[in-house]
Image (tube, rainbow, N blue to C red; front, side, top):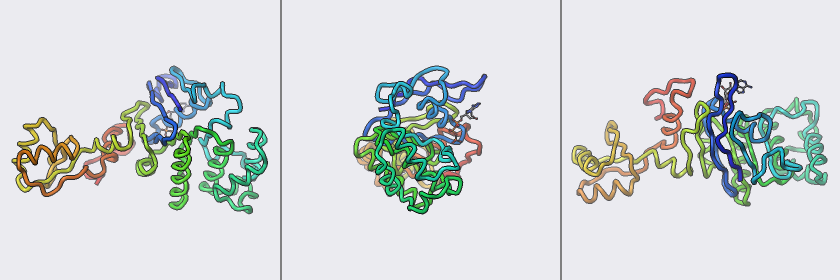
Length: 301
Ligand SMILES: Nc1ncnc2c1ncn2[C@@H]1O[C@H](COP(=O)(O)OP(=O)(O)OP(=O)(O)O)[C@@H](O)[C@H]1O
């Protein structure tokens, strides 16, 4: 369990992280989603004691990171795939980690195998690794001590599609065995395919959090009927807000509720389904103004 409570980090008069609170639960993957510069890395660095918070605190299994003896046995960390010593080989990086954590040498080979780094690749210096290979090595290092918590900053960066799928499988399997995973990304589709819970951050503040299903539902329901006037009238009568679309409308209520209302009002529907891109719309909407690009209508289609 990771518990983040009222975390704030300021640099001079700039607030990088602003009163952030959330919990990551065992057996679940928590996606930490936000555009560039939102405050994800800063939050994660505070979690593992690399940055001091201005206010608030983080506990991992009830303890601050710096109070955990042999932290690698409890918390696996991958913050920067390029942080490893460039002059060491992948195998040396893992062997050193294993020795520091008091693990048998066999664990190194096990991990190399798990992340599919071949014998030749493991013998190459990290400076000659591709970004994807560095991420694999970083994952091996994070999992080396068989920790119960994983903190990963953009771990899929640089991985090819097969690598991204592999990573998803590793994280899901890890959570299924009871592990706690926090994974950051600025890419929604990367997160929504693997996360059970999602925390969205924009300009240092949490803008939404909940289960992936809950947040997807906030996309509302797409509903179409031949008689649009009758449909709008029925929704108004039921106090359901909606947004008119070119050939239908998006109602701010679950599909089951809309179905109930339109059935009672005897309005034949031509379409009724959760609105497309619920999470994506929400992400773009909630972080609008916190992004560098201007989000214009139609871009999300
Ligand atoms: N040491 C520092 N001094 C001043 N500002 C900093 C420092 N570290 C981070 N920041 C600022 O804090 C903000 C949040 O940065 P952070 O790296 O946490 O964002 P992020 O969500 O991880 O972004 P990205 O997706 O681009 O990695 C940015 O505006 C960044 O410039």
